[in-house]
Image (cartoon, rainbow, N blue to C red; front, side):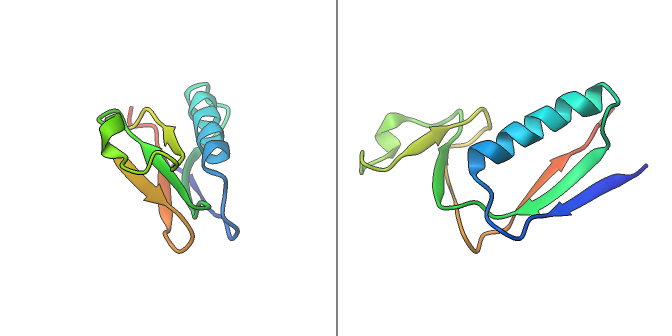
Length: 90
């Protein structure tokens, strides 16, 4: 099995990264692409998971991007390496 390992040097916009990953999942399921491990950083952003509650944010001026992942609030930003795995578990 061959897994592509990708390392982005410059920060990658969060929504662009998620779109890329979702497209990759579709391609993997259609056997049009290989599995992927992607190591990157994002520009500063707060994301809200499925357990998020509006009352969790005290400063309403903070922009929060809602996601389909679990959890509450997560900050991503420069200096924080994130590792995304797109692996076919079947």
